[in-house]
Image (cartoon, rainbow, N blue to C red):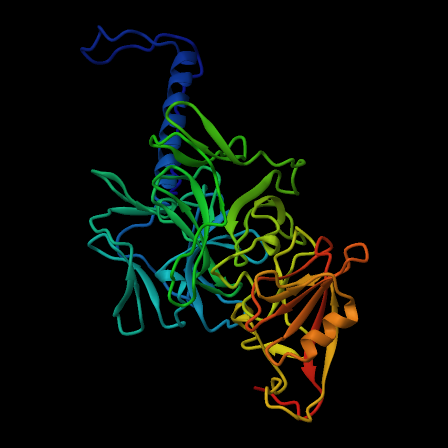
Amino acid sequence: MDFVTYLLIIPTKNTKPPLTSPMESIPYIPNEKMSALLLHLLLSFLLSNFLSAQADTNITLGETLTPLTPPTSWLSPSGDFAFGFRPLESDPTQFLLAVFFNKVPNQTVVWTANGGNTINNQSKAVFTEDGRLSLQDHSGNEIWNAGVNGATSAAMLDTGNFVLSSSKSGILWQTFHNPTDTILPGQTLNKGTSMYAKLTDDDYSPGRFKLKFQDDGNLALIPRAYPSAFEYDSYWFTQGSDSGSNKLVFNESTRSLYLSYPSGGVISVFSAPALGGGGAGGGYYLRATVDTDGVFRQYSFPKGSTNSDWTVTNQVAEDICTISFETFSGPCGFNSYCSNPDSQEKTHCLCPPNYSFINPNLKFKGCKPNFTPQPCEPNNKTQFHFATLNNVDWPLSDAEQYSPMTELQCINECLNDCFCLVAIYADDYNNGTCWKKKFPLSNGRMGSGVDRKAFVKYSVENPHKL
């Protein structure tokens, strides 16, 4: 803002000055009132200039962002949010074009452009002269755009919403109407909108789960095949009966998330979290995210904190390890098992003893044996033993069931069956039950509520990586 010095000339005596012009009819204004009037005009002028300066923080046509040379992002007025380039933590040479929390230590991402795909440090984001938001490579070739033109300004708002606006038509496009995996306070979603969990913690492309606001007015969590994106049946959903034009609302004042119906009805998704006074900055940042393990969680973070992490305040599909997916491998993939010992943490995926992940970076692809499977030819000399896991089961991989049976009989049944990978035993008050499990194992789970013992078969001769 430019500052201007104003000289106020105020007579020192409260006397009526002589008129030296023909304008004798001008009413006399006492000096005290004149001073107050001039001061009021001055303050009004300065306030007008201040407000204009605030409006000038809007992004204008032709402005550009680059990953390495400032400006790398456009900030909201408070600085709480930024739209711009954010490097990947695992590979700082790769960048996301994203909206993120600017004052949170790890700059948590809440929205991504370009399908969550990264770009290198030679790329740029341009608010073009014809009013488009365009992501371009080093040669100026367009990689992604927001799908609208004719915008005259853009802005990163304090709500976390990045908008493209026209002086004639208002908001043309906004991130709040095009969510990726997160919804923020003040954001409202309409029917037909979906939010996709990212593939992994550091891969922001659409992953294996989505939250869909269905045409019937209900909210549903749906598993997806990777990479085909085939969708299975939902594993969690609301049960509303009102088919009107309801909305999903993240209420900014109550901090609750709910489905709101035209009739006035409400279905709660997340109740208002119990929060204290917040951090040094006062209050909390909030978000609700579809996480990589398929759980929809609401998080809080104390403003001004530099050594805190996001805290889970609400969640649905809380213990996803206990959900049986009839036609889906589960959150952890084939031949693995799922553990969620602390509901505040994301799900852990584990391999049985003598198995290893097919891809350690994509654990949902499951596990493979580190030994030669048992041959079915007679008189084979390969010896097989069993590793024991407590409180583990693969409930959807049954080949055969026996009852009553002792634990030793159960192990021998699996040992003598070349198709048996695992024997599961439950000692039901001395009336034991045995299940032989077939390949591939699916929907594996571990937990204190799994009253089973797993015996995992493996060879002790000529082990090798398959």
